[in-house]
Image 1 (cartoon, protein in one colour):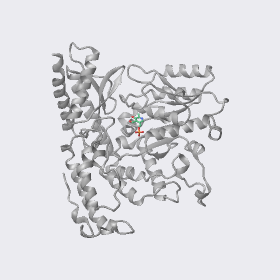
Image 2: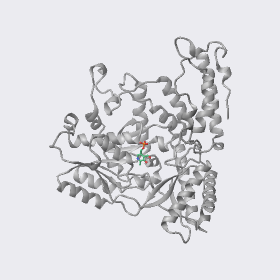
Image 3: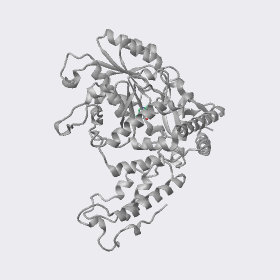
Image 4: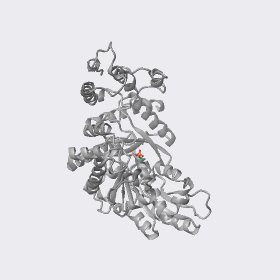
Length: 502
Ligand code: PLP
């Protein structure tokens, strides 16, 4: 796939190109011509994406070695830069938008989301003060209220957009810390012996972003107490209650509990309702990590997985994971958004305005001052697909995941390693006569073979010490034939790798 950009220049290539003019940006006519070509090229990219290896086949350092170590003194023809995208950048791209990208959590960048990001880059607004970016501030409020309605959360929840779930959760824990110890904002935690050890609780399957959050907030990893899970990888509420009692007896201060709906390894669902009972009993902030599965709350038939989340103090969900919104867009909903403001609002003189007191300034709700115009891409996606269109796509992903799970269950070579509540399937080999260790080695070898083939990309996890392949279905382009294809790749790889044991 190559594209010719030569005729996009406003001046002949041999003479001075517009980028070597002493001032100003690319002329409008050149921008227009490149822009048209670029969109054509992206359309071709999506049309032909299945011909590309999902996982970049570059070895480490190949791209770096191919690029000049120093920047150019003079501007270059932009067509040369774009040629380098074809020849140098493309081979180093792992194609997250490929329908056979099943690793981590498959993402779902929609075309309208890409258009929105083009607008956002063109406007280049920094949504810190309402005045600085009214479009972003007001659209964010509207679109997050739409999403709240779509996910059946009560009106008491108000949202704010951050980049990632890691950042959303860090802010939620900061608000919880502020509520538990209101002078920590001023006095901090270091150099004080009047502050008890604060505790944050989550299951042993919680995402590593929680560990990073407590590190960032100066609570330290010792503040994070991981609660045992049951055989289905769900937090055991009784163990949580015992841990809290233990900690209180030791003089510690429980500040936050983080149940997960859709854990990273298996998409298991913690018993949020029972966790909410415990949080209410002890007056502890409950933050629900629904970064992956939160999108599935738009499906009424999934409501059982979300029981009790409406009792949370805060909830994170990532439309950039499973709601057709290109990276990055994470939403933090809070029952009382003022708690974030209490933790973070700080207005220096140069940011004071005469705006009305009820104006919402994004900078008051977190550590970032300037914020990208992210709401646009979620607004575009919801309007383009409609709630029903989004529901249909999520349902199809869940159906395809179930289809694969059924194939695994029906096969004598494979077994499921976890339940499949959403669209993630965890499985491993069960070749007769092999020890668990040999099964793990075999499963790992199969994964490597499939990934290096370029035909699909899957990732892995460890469950109860055993290796398992994770296959996530979530690309907006995925169809049943892609699941058939990855199943064939897995079984071909099985036959090759199992020869060692025959
Ligand atoms: N929480 C869960 C359950 C996740 O699965 C992930 C990422 O996969 C995260 C949090 C972190 O997401 P982000 O990359 O948006 O920080």
